[in-house]
Structures are given as C-alpha cells and as structure tokens.
Image (cartoon, rainbow, N blue to C red; front, top):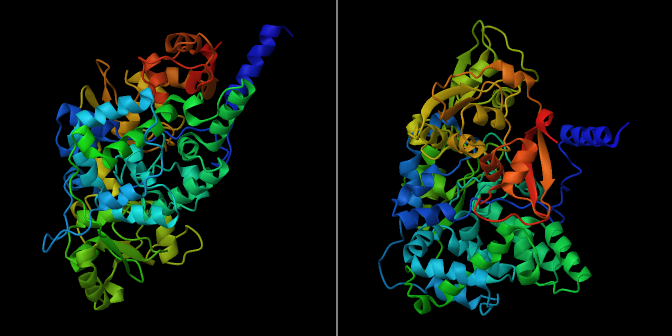
Length: 564
C-alpha cells in the first residue's frame, strides 16, 4: 500500500469517527480543553455603539426548548431586561451596593496590560453600556454578590455574568451555552444542572449561580489560589490552561495568565472582567456615573409546594407574567416543573402577598387539566402536539406503561390556563417572534429531512451555518430532528422549500477537528478542505480580520470526497 493511500485511509477513518484524534475531550470540566463560546456582551456593545433601542437582545439566539406556540410577544417582554421595575423610593436610600462590591475586590487592578487598556478605553467611552448592564443586572446582582461573599471569592466574580451574557438570563450562544453564567450542556450536567421538557437549570438564577461559584472554587483550588488562571479555565477548561503552563515551563517562561498562549477568546476574557472592575471601583476616574443600586434584595424565594401555572402565579403575586419569567427563566413552558423544586422567585415587595394568596388558593386549581377521549387515528404524539405537551408527560400523568392507547380511553392532559400570548417569555413564544422577524433575502419555510445538516442547508441557500442556526433559535451543534420547521432567509435567486436530493444524497459530510499550523490562514484551510471561509468563521466564532494562532483548534464540517 502506498504512503498516500495509507494517509487517505487514516483521514477517512478520523473523519468518520468525528476526528476524536484531532481534539481531546473529557467529561470533567476541570480537565476540559474546550473553549466555552459564550454569548458575551458583544451584541449589547454593538447596540450601544449603534444607538439601537433597548430591545437589542431580541435578535440573539434562543434555545428551542422554550415552546414555539408561546412566543408572540417575546421581544416586548424582553425589553424589561433594560427597564427593570425598581424598588419603592419611599424613605432614604439604603447602603449603596457598589460600596459593598468594592470592599470585596481582590484581583490586581493595577496590572499594566494592553488588553486591559483596550477594554477599559471602550467602557469609559460608552457610559450608556454601563447603564444598560446595571439595569439588567439589578434583578440578580445582590443575590450573586451575597453568594460570592459566602464562599470567600473575589467580588469581581459577581460581575462575571456581564462578560458571559451581559446579564441576559435567556442568552444562548451558538456554542450551546445558556443562561447568565453560560453553561454548556455537559458542564451543566456535571454540576447538577438538569434539563427537561419543563425546565433548564442552566438558566435558573439560584441553581446556576451555585454551580458557577462551585466551579470557580474548584478551579481556584486547582491553580493554587490564582484567580486569573481560574477565570481563564472557566472559559477554556482547566486542561487548556494546564497545557499552556506546561509549554511555558518547558521554554523557561513565566506561567502567569498574562504570559500564557491561550485561545483568543480566553486571552480577552480576564482583561474584560478586570476592566469592568476598575470602572466599578473608581467610576469617577473614567468619567462614569454608576446608576444607584440599593444594597437590598430584589427578590425572595417563595415555596409553592407543588406545580403552579405561571400566569396564575403572576396574578396571585400581582406582577406581570414577564416579571415571573425574568426571575424564573429556567421554565420552558407555562408552568413550573412538576418534579420540583417547588419554588418561585418574586419581587421582594410582592412576596408576602403571594404567600398569602397561594395559601388560600386550592391546590387542585394550581394547574389546569383537560379530559380527552381518544379518537380513531390518535397517537400519543398527535395528542401531545394538539395540547402543546410531550408524549412522556401524558404517559407520566396517566400512569401509562406503554405508548399504546385505545379508542374511547380517557386521558388527563395538563394545559395552560391562559392563551399562548400570556406566556410571552416561554421558549416557544420567543422562537416564534424570532422566526417572524423580517431579514434580507427570500423567506423559505424548510422542513428538516433525515440526513440534513446545517452545512447542507446553509450551502444550498448561500447563507452561513451560524445564520441558519440563529434565525431558528439554535446553535450549529444542535441536532436537526426530521420534521422540524426552519425559517431560512435564502440568498438564492429562486429558493425552493425543498432542496434537490442529488447533491445531498452524494454528500459525505463529517465533523473534523483541525489544529492550526504555522503559516495557516482561513483562506488556505478553506481551500484545503473545499469549504467556505465565512463558514469556518461562523463555525468557530472567528473574526476574519484577525490572524490564526498556531495550535488553535478549529471545527470544520467537510465533505470527505473533496478533502485532502
């Protein structure tokens, strides 16, 4: 066998197995070498620079778990991120939360580094950004700072959600990271953040904050109390940071954060947090006036005892349903998780009223139910679609051991007490709003078929993978389920609802891990694997104007028939 033929077989084998030999992976985030691509604050920065209105977040990706038929008014409700209902102004202002925050600062704010200066210059020249972040974070910051102090961690860590998500509890990155702390599914699962049809703990303010701070505690211990290395590892995995340190030791170079050759996103991650901390520490030095924020809780935790319809909860508490979703963003549907925890966060000045009203509210009316008699042609799947639920929920409620049902059988179906527009921030409502937005191109309603990939669909419509995913509230790594409806703003002159089968049938697309070599460029890599430069950039969240770094890991989706 020739060397060339042997090499080709090795490549084909690697491609067919997902190229596990190219990229190392582990279930332990402390050892991970995967950079968590977070939503970050770039969209908010862009909105501030362009002068967009407060609904700038409405176009950010949203995970599809939150039900499609409940998203018509999502953008209006989400505006409240930038306009929170403040506490009563009666009496004198309590102790300023900013003073308390400053007392807990522990990072070195005097570090002289160009990356910090660049971030600092931007924040100082855009005070409206600080105003918007404070407005968004005002619901959550007091609680997060409390939890940070309990663990003896630097108070700067309480500002980390600014870097991760700009304090958007519904933030969802194309890297599949969710919530204010931007947990990817695997790391979330490792720290006990469960996901179901009803909920996603990665968006739960209490559960996710606890998980994030536990993760940071462990990373701090691993790196001998060096907070900057712990922060870098939170973004790129402990394995990435340890490998960079080993390389520096071999070259007799320092192993502090500022001396390490880390992924581009990680190199800017810590400087962003330090720059923000410097602004919040001495705002007057940078011409910034911090919006006042009382050192008082925004919300209280109220035990509900059982599942509760969120619209009914809002009515009992005397608040908008939007406020319930913003404080309890983990709920994907119209009610709390039937398996618990049975609690809701409500504004602190409404907690007493809510507890009293809930105590006098009949338990059997907390969730609405419908009786349904099975008809000819029915299946659990068709019934679940009709009532916006899942077959497993119907099975569980009715104690069915199989998915077999008979004509005339009576089923009990949990259902929302209000119309879909009442649940504005549920997943489905947000997705529907996103898909309805007018964009450049011709609108195509596309039904996913078996074997479809984002890469195939994007190429056929001359758009990027990232665009297709974002238009549909997904990440490029999310699975495409046959029958799923996608909206595509096609750039082809005559878009069709269904693409031809000829090219699709012949394609042999595989996910490839590629490590950048010295002298590589996006153009060279694209030519080598017969892919598009824009696609490589979108798959890896790259800025095309920046140079690639040797050793940098990339993910490619290539047709192995056209690969070297």
